[in-house]
Length: 214
Image (cartoon, rainbow, N blue to C red):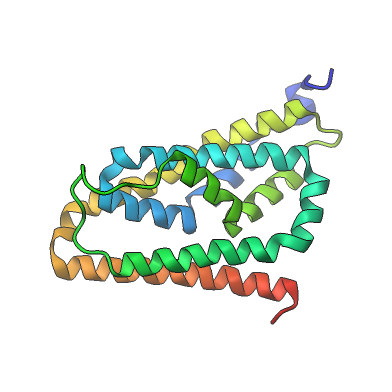
């Protein structure tokens, strides 16, 4: 059957290399995690949960669709990846400016954090997410993979991703009370804004090199 799965030994998808790769890519600094840390500071961990779920859910959906349509996606990225990178990096530059200008952390009931849909949609213009998804699909899908393999891979990636990114929201929450002091807040906002802008600049530069523009 198209949806059937082979044995664990044959597919070897629930493997330590897969889980460690997804965990490492999920927990290292990147656009999603920097956004989560800033959201944890401004809105607290609990109000950031939809953002986290949106990232993991969007990541799982992206893995599922990309692994099912891998050949078509690779062909599409060959022609459209620069535009996706421009959109994603442009959003990160805008976000870094907003963080730079941010005032004191907002009250837990004020403001509006990024929700599930917005966070899930951002994965499609997040250059790091595309690198992670493509590499995961190419490296860990077994030959002759079925839709069942793609669904399993998507589920594994989403489940491993969620606790890893939650660490960043938790760090933001932990810093929240310290940022009531203006000097500390200005330092934090400057570091976060610079990190976001540097991340966007590096990703954009890399995509321009790949595209042969630079």
